[in-house]
Image 1 (cartoon, rainbow, N blue to C red):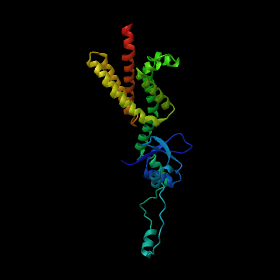
Image 2 (cartoon, rainbow, N blue to C red; image 1 turned 90 degrees about the horizontal axis):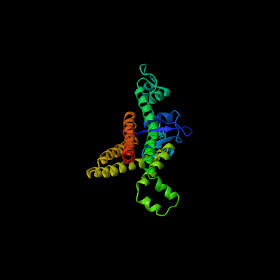
Image 3 (cartoon, rainbow, N blue to C red; image 1 turned 180 degrees about the vertical axis):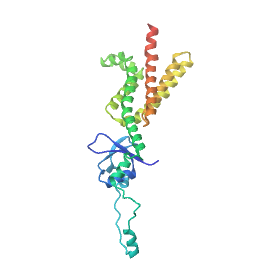
Image 4 (tube, rainbow, N blue to C red; image 1 turned 120 degrees about the vertical axis):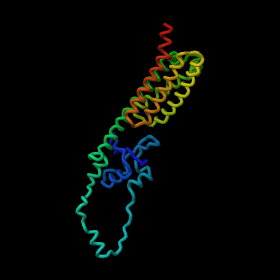
Length: 269
């Protein structure tokens, strides 16, 4: 698969792309791209200046090769000076328009990039919302423990460590805050949290169901749905898949709240 990069100028807040290496070379030759521009590093999941990546810089801004002159025959010179009447000159503006999808032939490229940008912009608040709901489902029922710690009550920390799920709720809250600050560098940690949470809680609730608790089945399904939705929303740039994953994740976390907090409350009432 060809390498493609999102880029933005140092003074810009919005990104353009993705561009292939050849398209970036064209932008550089037209003086519309410099080594000070930022590119999105998919491995680090953060922005970095092109000049900090020697390999990428060398591809986009190759050193000009020295030209050596040799004697040419009059026939060779004549053939070089001949113009092809059937070949129209290619303008830089036309190349840039094609690269950015402003021509009929490349309109589908522009449409794809636009939907990918919409997906990337929507995934951050969706993920933050899911994590905030998850944090609320844990921290609200455990408020007495948190309040005991804040009031420095005896044995408060002992009670906290007996309920380690509170740490997960605090972690979800921190991740949610980072996302609403647009710190997408936490995406790898969120993926790990999604996989760990889905595997652990789905297994635990499946065992409770096998031991005779009918709500364990619904809790296991809800935990699995939340984990899958959370994970997929961090890796996809396809709008339809992101919407399906977001719906699955939000439904899963709301299911966790319903069966872990509201159902016991209604039964108790």
